[in-house]
Image 1 (cartoon, rainbow, N blue to C red):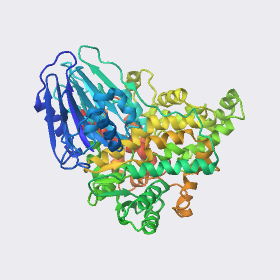
Image 2: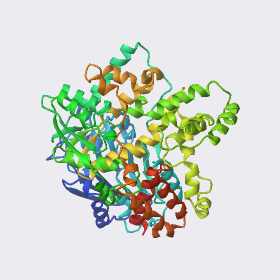
Image 3: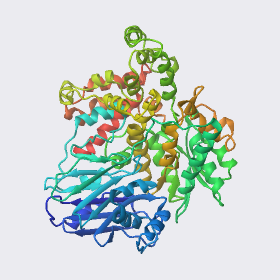
Image 4: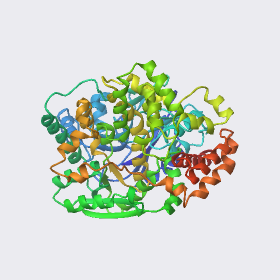
Length: 628
């Protein structure tokens, strides 16, 4: 895992100043503490910060071989097989790592080599013969890649936004539409940016820029297809699922440095640890984060798994005073990011880095196999929608939803207002709201008239609605999963894991997001993913020989930070301070009286606004860092 950066002049081969490359990669030095490299040629320059994982002593970057130069972040897990295939074509290798596979792969296959890669990656290729820059990102967006056009006509790219921002010619302007998206979802999605003019290369896309031609739009090279179904009995489908899970885990255990795993005590991470223990001759190193709040603490469950598989286990408790980390989080994410579990994720990665250089995570199974509670609720709502005509639902359920009292503090099944309102909407609109943090009604109260005018009708939920509408899928629940995998997964889950692990020089790998496993899961019948109120049904069945039933079938807790409780206690003053924020007032975009009302209602217990208050706090700090 590494950090990359570069500059390319698409019009004419102007010289590239190495000092600017050093500034761009220096801003990302945390991603690669083991060394930096700079390479320039007419009209192009690459910079690389390395975290050595495979071929530790060799494989320097940027890597140049004749007319082809590569700057690579990530891991290619099938690089050995590809090396043999390329050797058969006459390629001569000079290193033992995976980077050189991209050099020869480009020479023999061009952009189509992407389909042969198994791994997580974001990389740049410069082809001197073609006068072209090629940028590519892995299928699911595990690794990030940002790019922008500069005033002098150059294209700048970097792993993180801060790499582009380090270029002295880039002019910073906030984008109000990204703030709307952020308040809706808690993160800025991949097709938006808090800084106008900076683009995130979408997951499963590449960008090919040829000198002398206009810069084209990125092209999609991979998508997950839910439109086909895998045949067979539950037992046969389970065998296929377990085989692919095992393949994903084992392939990600290749490293020349110490390796371990994150362990929450939930199904996903426990399953990963079980399969690691099955494949490893040595004790697996595991790390767990806990909380003093018993309702959120999973350490006892993690200990059960650690003891069952005799892992080398470590744990740590996160306290409210970890709020002091907020400036660290803001610096690492660049954009506002309000998934409060990032606090715990950072501490988890920090602890893991004391023991290992690579850690396997359990991300992806919830998106892949309907593991979230919102999936269960939405499936139930879909059954009700199927019983009544749309006009009837809008009229009856919509009216009841407006009349029913709002009880934010109650569990979702008891919040009848939320359910009635959802039943009055169509499937996509209801799910777009269910996946959000701050709903459109509260956002309308928070935004000033000036902000609403600047938004020009832009509405965050429309992104989810469009993804569900355009999904290659046959079932409403397939469409929900597709939207989660295209928007939520790269925007929240994978961004959090990448930035928090890279902040401490730790490589996090995602075995449950092996694309072969994801493609197989998308072909499973919905009943294999969600059955009898159980998400990840088939995954749990195939893990029964490995894990205790009280781990497999206990209620899902999720990796949650008790931020709402903290805002009624240790962080109450921080919430109250937002009403007087000079920075938020200077933007002209917020009604700070309304912000103060939310804080007061939350502190008193009259309403639940903890996540929205956390959003506003993170937004204030991010705007200060980016634009003040």
